[in-house]
Length: 415
Ligand code: FIX
Ligand code: ZN
Image (cartoon, rainbow, N blue to C red; front, side, top):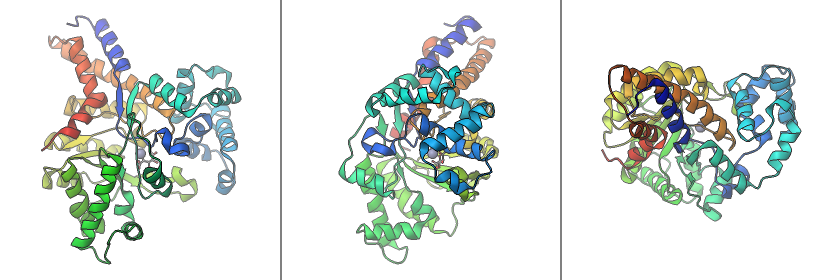
């Protein structure tokens, strides 16, 4: 039994540091996807978060930046954000935390020495290194069968890697349905001109084939802030008639990532998205109307977090995950994690990395684990103050659930 705050702090910190992580949402790829897996200093610096921050200082035409090669872009980002200004934004600090955890001399500010460090790795060796340093055991990829490059690899040269699990990402079916259905037609599915049972059956066949091909753990979509369910839109029809039935048949969750305002500044490309307050009512309706389906939900707007946590208290088929994107900042992770632990106890997935560059697993988990450990320490300390006596095993049990167990249990749950 833990008998002092000092011992509690030590046990919480050690347990959080040593518990292996399942990262439920990333944009990483296993090595067989070749260049689709981004890694190294130039990719770290070209992260769209840093591109957005850099353009706050730049007055060059956007196309001048985009016409540069990656190294030149990285050099400009490094100069603008790390040399001409102090890099204390979360995304900037992240680059430095990564370099530090890899044993590089951050103080030297010698970007070329960092480049030669990364040049010394094969991708296979570097994947091993990053998983070891970050404490991540498994990542869930974001796999889009509508992306031709990715599609070709799944169909011709996919090599399973147990550290990289798949999630079937189907945004085009919901936000660009007409073109998506035309693609299915091109791929030989018997899609009719109207949304009828034959078309629904073919969409279900498409989803089933890719769920099996990818051994997908869940079906996912990122949905705009004004996503509303139900309404008379085609996305409602596709969700009701195709996605929910197929998810139920395979007993896998439908993951909804709600709240993006796509391309409010298209000149920034991937960095051009914004955020809007979403409708928790739509999530509640889905959970209530489809009690045998499972829903994983993350919302982008800070203003949605309390409502969403309360909804999860009402629906066992709803698993809330992550401090997504613009919420993935220390002050907000702390606020949101405290509130979730107070409303949901251990039954939540406090974080996912959304890593787009392999190296980001190192800093995104380092930063989040420190905050989650602080929140956990405060929660257990409050418990001890009641006279409740807690053991090391119980803390290990809870942290194991938060860092992956809750996800795997939810996957095998049947409601
Ligand atoms: O839709 C998503 O999965 C988002 O995470 C991405 O689109 C976004 O660009 C991102 O990288 C957020 O961290
Ligand atoms: Zn993402």
